[in-house]
Amino acid sequence: MSEIKHGNIPTMSVEKVVKRLGDAYSAVLQKGLPLKTVPSVMLWGPPGVGKSQAVRQIAQVIREKTKKDVRVTDVRLLLFNPIDLRGIPTANADKTLAIWLKPQIFQMDPGEDVVNVLFLDEISAAPQSVQAAAYQITLDRVVGEHRLPDNCVVIAAGNRVTDRSVAFKMPKALANRLLHIEVEGSFKAWKHWAIRTGVNEKVVGFLSFRQSHLMAFDPASDDLAFPTPRAWEMVSDLLNGVNDNVDEMYPLIAGIVGSGTATEFRTWSKVYQELPAIADVFGGSMPEVPRNTDALYALTSSMVAFARAHQDNMDQIAHSVRFANRMPPDFGTILLMDYLHIDPAFREKLMAIPEYAKWMQTKGSLMNGSV
Image 1 (cartoon, rainbow, N blue to C red):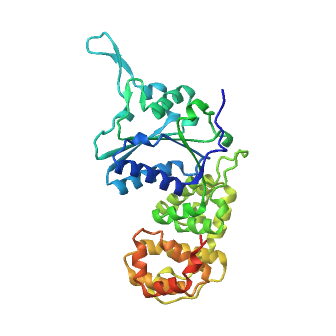
Image 2: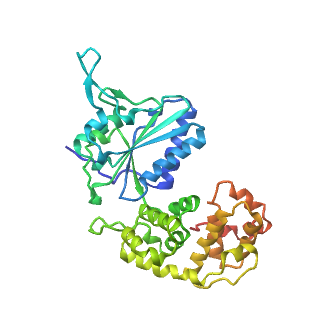
């Protein structure tokens, strides 16, 4: 049987996947059309690239655009067997027929003010018996006797066979009934998300300095720990939630992204000893600007994190904009571009700062092509 190849499907960053699909589902709902107008989606991509994160962000876009209650059911198919999907057989009331008890994943609210998102993750790694049931859900929105409600979106995701993860090839007969997208790692898109969600400033600063370390998955390597967007999110969680001292957290970080990358991250993090106090920058004292490139990346990331945490204090934000004018133009541009991703409404607040408005008039053209 012919198998699907990935060379002729669109490749998008997580940011673009979220926008395209979020807008598509929202448009269908706003026009009163059935959700099945948009075919069931299959997201392909290497481990850790952000497929699961994309689904959660798509749900948020639908929620914001339609004002509906969007509920995500995340099903990790690698942990399921066919009975988990079809249900447990039992006798009917008069003991004459077998019926199938409805699985928990089908317990969805069919209400008009609700949108259900059924996310079938790791579909390509599931046993083929489970895949058969999962494909029936994806293609026909039913499995056995059970049917998904009309207000349900179905999105599946899996690794490519070429990733050397556990993955089975998808027959073309099934592939032809899905909308396929290959998800790629994009530093620019990841950084926008990281700023908005509060990823640790040291992680953002290091990856701004070493963008190639965001995604270093090599299917030919037998390494167990390697950097991916998912791995860096785990590193961020440790630094934000346990201890932000990279030296002390090094053994755990190495267990997530690998010892080589962790060593480089630990060495780079020492640059924070050279930075001026961020509170002084936002307090208006105008300390000296570092000269080293790695220190400037760290300073920029720290300033964005501080601005995100104090975004309602426009006096402090104004001081930081004045300080940005003392930074090298390319780093001042990066800083003010990053400010725009703190919150969608933050641009209007910035425009009320005279120094920012003046900067846009005189240096705004530098934003073209800035990371």
